[in-house]
Image 1 (cartoon, rainbow, N blue to C red):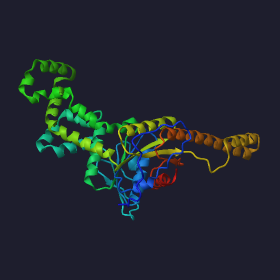
Image 2 (image 1 turned 90 degrees about the horizontal axis):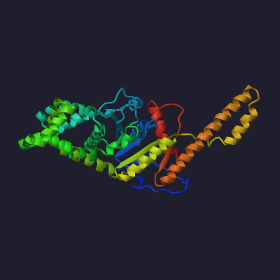
Image 3 (image 1 turned 60 degrees about the vertical axis):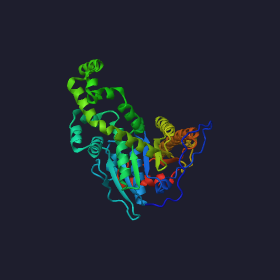
Image 4 (image 1 turned 135 degrees about the vertical axis):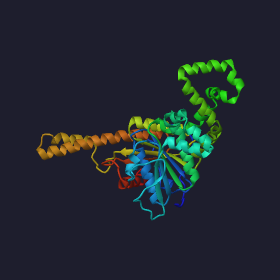
Length: 396
């Protein structure tokens, strides 16, 4: 395990808005975050198409090659994480990543959440053999565990809790799904509690709670109505499943609350990923404010694919003026003029990106930021991930 050194200070659970649009953000010290032995979970979140999966993989690889024992868990069903780590595929079991530098004593495992397999594992672990067989074969359970809204997010909480409880890794990096649903797992405990305490569930449990309820006129009327809507077999499957599953409800709820508390703990760090585009930065603000509202420890913002032309001291006006003079020249001069036009276009993009970053930092003055320059091509192997990791650690 890497030495802790001086732990990076986490963002307080609030954001402060300032009128200034030129606030210089605090630099996000990524290596300090990864080396801090007190950091045991890093949750990477952000909207789609911002390089979130690549960022998670590069963080995992960099931490492993610096001596941490790392497991990276993706909830995103896309296969990009497996491809970039050189794995044929990922499944619900952590798989070792080969080809990394283990000289510092670190290791790297990777896996992708399979919500049905995780649900099955929970049932088998917490129910008797007979009861688990009854649940696993129930048609309503099969549908619930495979496609029911919210199951993926809840199972992500279960899997994260399992991995942390195993104690085989000192750092777990979670790559969440794209879009705002990436934070839906924060709502999983409350949604589960609302479901289990709801009137509909209590109504469906009524037949199992005693003959008096079963014979009541009110229940008979409601059952008749549900039969017409759902069909008698579907309703029977639901009642059978819920009656069998009733003994497990409390355990599900308690483990979800424990994992939620773990996410609020100082051992966890959330990283928000964005690109310097208006929509992505708005989503980043949403993530930051939502995390603050839930008192989740935010480590900072990573802005991917940033354009920066500071090394070429030619302004937009100078490039456009020179290009205009060369437009009527020979083929060589025209080619140079076209290059100057491209340079001017890149500068305008960079200026727009800088304004967006400045606005974000003005609105969220306590959020550390790191900006990563745009690469020439896609990242699809360990060398590309190392390059991204270097940029994360050394760009600002």
